[in-house]
Image (cartoon, rainbow, N blue to C red; front, side, top):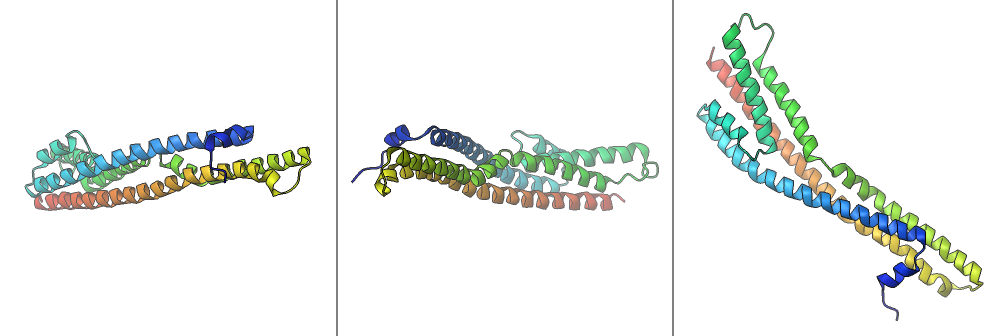
Length: 232
């Protein structure tokens, strides 16, 4: 019984099949880099976000706006901290504008609307940063099986051409060539399966970050409305 030998199979592959395998390996290296990078980024963001949210709630309960600003500015900043920092900066600038010009001269300016716009602006940017590299991962997960299949089709064509050129018939004459051709499909699936699994995992993780951002933003807006009501 002949054992599976990748090196012997590689030596007997055609140029098209070799090119396909090399391309798939390059895609695998890129997807692995994205997986490691996003995993490290998300792990750090989770840890920093938890500590930040606990500290932020404590300061907002004490109405310590300066303390909340310093906490949001502290490095390393989580995505939630960046959103809160932008919102608090907008809120403080709005209060300064109202205090300097007076509520009657400020016109149609609304502090709450300004804070909401700041939250939306920074939140979209942070979500885009979290998704960095995931587009390539999605493309690899969907394209790798088809690229492997292309190599298989090319390999089978070469196998049958070799059989025709040699004049030998039967399955034994093309079995080695077909096995080599199917190796490209197996390589494509091996690249695509981890990519699609990790893409789904990262997508769900980003959705959880969005939920956390929305919760903290809602709590911050409630604080702004409550402070505005108390200052009337």
